[in-house]
Image (cartoon, rainbow, N blue to C red):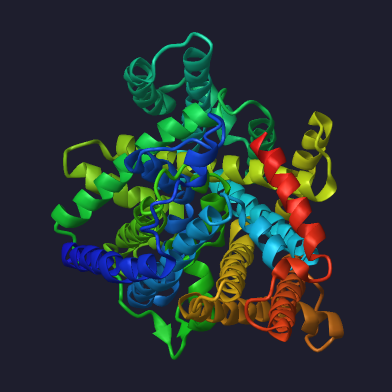
Length: 585
């Protein structure tokens, strides 16, 4: 029974929190009573101490979007549920949780600086630039994958019923509701409690009204192609990344948080009390390859599951916003490590929507978002909610999770490009946002209809590689402060090997075709995967070399050497201090 499987997973994750989480907490000394950066600075804007329960919800909603849904479902379909389940549990406890927790604590120890700033301080200015480029590219791949997934959601067909146009209509109405809520909160000064009472029922009404709009509107929306939807969604990303946070992102994120928790509760209750049997095979392999598409389980499984087990994007969030709100060091355990385990649970609940289906079921031919929405609709059917209403609700909730990711990624990509180029004006911000979106637009224009399947391996590899490079930077910091980094080095090495192996696999078809070893023409998908893989490989190798060079120079000076006395070290320290002061201002 699926309920037994979910109970085992919950118990295992709790044991992971108790033993591995507390082990890391002791090693990083999070019982430190010293004031955190949020308490020291407390500027009322960026550095604001938050209660652990409130911050856990904010951090979790920021890191848990569509990634832990799409990746685990694909991995379960390709390889069977057992390999995906084992990697989610082991990865979340020993790699993803370690990465997130250590990213958060290392940021706290550096006055809530970003991972990029930590790289700059402990490695080199060159490492800092290349790391920022790597993060920027990773964010672009996230935008590509989730834009195309959303576009496919707006074209959803289940049987003869076109759900997509109704979901698209509800999505646009939902965004308008979020804007109205933002105006009510920040211009008319309505309290959050009253706004919640008003806008939650309105949001539920929007879900209901989408399928009941006039037929002319739904017919017009159904005529929009996936490529056109891609363009519309990227245009939304441009607007959302430039307008004030209070007008759209904050109220939409708040409403989206209600969606997220409601869906988790529905998924957990349905899996535990729905009496669904485990129909899909535990192993779907021929040797060590998928019986579905021939992909090798090593290393493809590890980059396909992605956020459900480990995500470099989490480190960007932990060190970008969350660390500036931690009120006590000990809170970092439940927020940094605990949130990753919750995301692992979300991934397992997503897999359960596949496990309940027998092999050969027509639903298994659908996109991951449809399979997930079908599972949620089946759970809601247990309390006699109409399937079509439930499916529309689940699809809109999925789109809402994607909006969370797209909003954050586009804004972060703009920030990083502005930092790399020095374009700090409003015009510079606009240009940086356009550049950050024109590349995904070209990518999706050149790829086949399901562009997210081309982008997903690149996204997964870059995201996991970002996690390994973040762990590499943290390891350098631990070594230079005289601490044993074995608990960060081992997961770093594992992820580095798997992701570089994956990138080699992505580049081989491109290189073979280019060199004439494989007859045939270069198709856009092969070119895109090959070029992206080569770029990521080169960036990662440069960063690994810089880390090794930094440690070699440090060893040459002997233990206890002042890292700020290395060539250019004083200059980097002074520059870093100026940037911290600027950030505070």
